[in-house]
Image 1: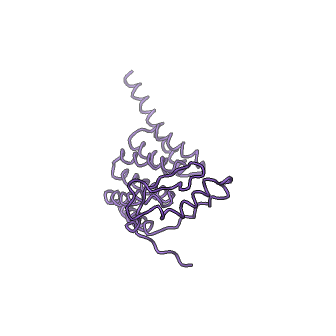
Image 2: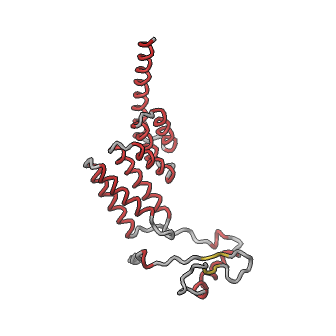
Image 3: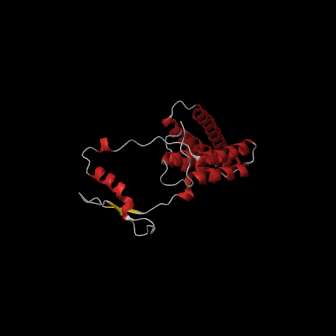
Length: 222
């Protein structure tokens, strides 16, 4: 089965449109005020025919087709290349270069055209930011690591890696109780996650040592 050739972003023109939902409107869709002069109302005839059907449908579930299955395109390949290069730099301990490459991957994912499946931007962007959070942590930039982890959670809250990265960043900042809460929240989404269970165990041991040290200091000064 042959796949359709990818179309470069530069070959696509986004045309502003307006929608009139008035019942029995002859032309529900019209050109916006800033539409290019090369477009005329006649270009919208097929679209208006479809709009009239959809707006007057008594059973939208039958009329509306299911969303298409997303298909990787050239942008996906470039995003993956930047991510893999970042992974190589990360494994080599080259935190600065890893951050740079993950940033390139994130920016390409975030700049996807609006007509492409949003699942791509969300998944690719969350993965790039999650990796960049780890790279920031390796570089000792704990605040940046936390910011990226928070963004990952906003993008994909059920994905436990965002909660894991948030906990790691908080722990590195000495905010152990908050880190524990981050890990426990992640476990609510996946109670079988061994990484999170191990992280909680290690953190609770750190908290016990901190409490014991604090108690010893109090007793010394009493």
